[in-house]
Length: 359
Ligand code: DP6
Image (cartoon, rainbow, N blue to C red; front, side, top):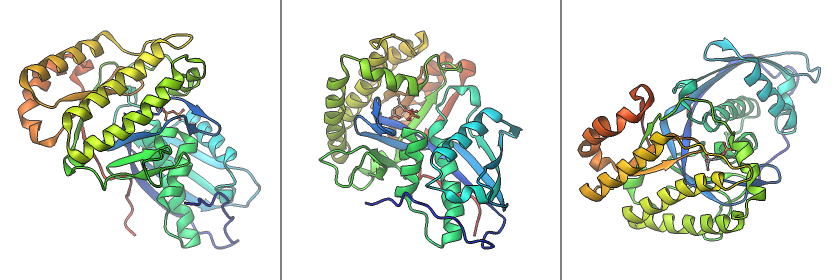
């Protein structure tokens, strides 16, 4: 698919003031993106569940202004002016002004809030950036009369944060080209729900907050460290293989294989951090304790409860809907005490971004 990367200015006098508001979810990678090149391109393909409860709501209140080539943005996060985030957005818009040349024709007030506490350690770039991009795409679509293209929204979200490219699609999304997946691309993500057993579109992801501290090394810095990692090339090969295998396991409804791959992906990601130069560790003692508890419970109960991790210490508990009632006492009694303040965000596979303003 060809993405139109040259936007257009709005016709003078054609812009009216308006308000757009979108909710966009976070996502959890099953096969991880870790390592990039060029302009935000992934070294290997990845696949993720789109989430639901963990999301960002962003609105843009806009009105026309004289086009002096300058941006005029006020940014509020969780109700308060936030200069650091505002500057990040301005930097992004300036860098990619060819995509939205009309931004200098508007005065914009952007307000954003997350469904999860800011200090919960949950990555917010995927939901935050995709929500912003959906708002911008909506403004553009209102003025050029064309429908929002999710492929283009994914392309733009990728430029802001790689994992955000996957958040614009419902249920399952693949980002990164793989010769066994038709239409897959390094430039944008594509939806991948058709060929999976419906059990996977109802999957649970309970996010256990093991630590709410700020990460010591950002994902962006972590990606960069893959460049000198002696295991990098083997890792990219493994990810390609794991993607093929996980897709097959989801088609066949093979939970055991699915679980084996997601857990291996999570531990590989953290192993790569531990053996990069300089080396670093984002896991906490409670992360390891919870992993051991899950594995012991699984071997005793034979129930398909698995875990994954993103680039942090929090555990994502993955399980099919039909065992939810059965495993909830174990989660509450054994696992919850490991969480800060007993905090678990009960999430599920979700349907992607939602327009919150009825037209
Ligand atoms: C471990 O998308 O946060 O969550 O592109 O630099 O913004 P940037 O990185 P980011 O990296 C996510 C890494 C990951 C795996 C994944 O989501 O695939």
